[in-house]
Image (cartoon, rainbow, N blue to C red; front, side, top):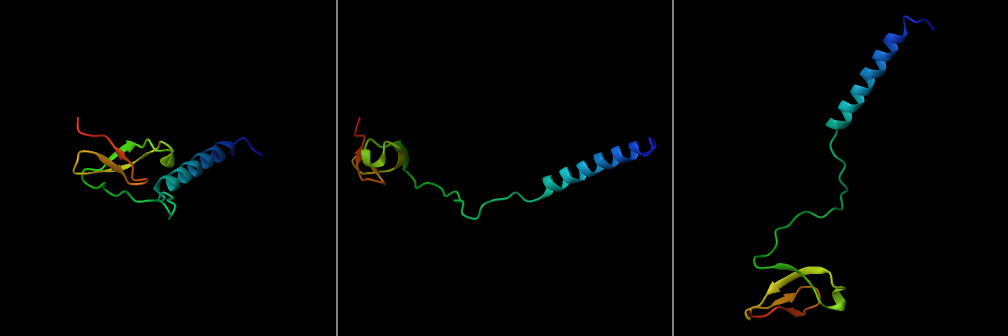
Length: 83
């Protein structure tokens, strides 16, 4: 291989790497079809840690009641009270 060809090969590698990078950045992002879409929470709903073993002490939406407490949407336990 002649030494005169090496700069052209190097330039070809740089141009092809730039073309691949450009194509990847312009390609649409891959998004799985089964992902959940964002929905706005209901007014007054709070995401609180549930104290029930049924909910495994995880955070679930709690809906307000008229008495100032919140009811878990997963297990139905009440949380909080008038202060």
